[in-house]
Length: 122
View (tube, rainbow, N blue to C red):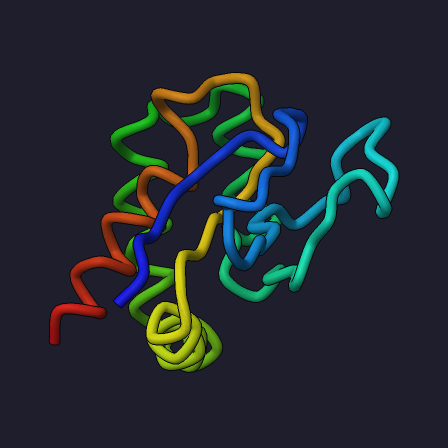
């Protein structure tokens, strides 16, 4: 079983990344597709545009954003299907979820990884 990693898309792609999946709704600024070296783009598991905008404009704190995003993931059939795809990918090797945000401590990827790991353990 492979390891699930996260990484900023602006950091150099490495062979050790394994399968690279972009988990942002919007394409990262200034990033060329060739440099990104992506295997997939999983827009369907990102926060809704409304929730993303509310958080980024300061309308809710990170804790509220995280709780609402977890609710969105739990209600999403696409997110549940992604767990199954991810399980298959991890059976073949490592997977790196890549994202663009500068804040590496409080972002949707941290919430997503926690949710994915919980569902992968089931």
